[in-house]
Image (cartoon, rainbow, N blue to C red; front, side, top):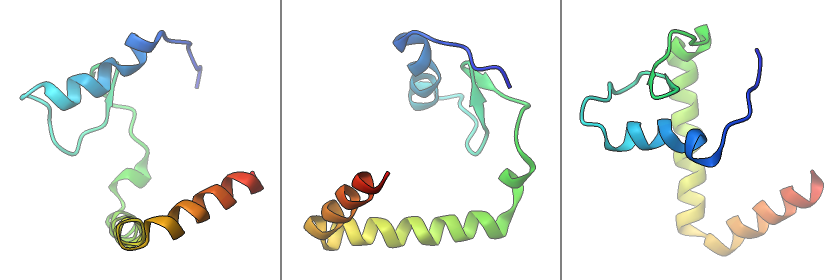
Length: 81
């Protein structure tokens, strides 16, 4: 896969289109402001999606319930990298 450099407006365009266009198709992968046909097979793995959802909810819960601790964990991870 070739990685092209984009300007900030070019790089944010797809996000803006997906957020504001009432014709955006929910659950689709967008690239360059349109639905992309380049989707990895794992994107259709329902077990993986469910696990990601559970982990995301757990992490968000930690941030909401214990914001200071979550921030400290984030900073500690950044120091490791």
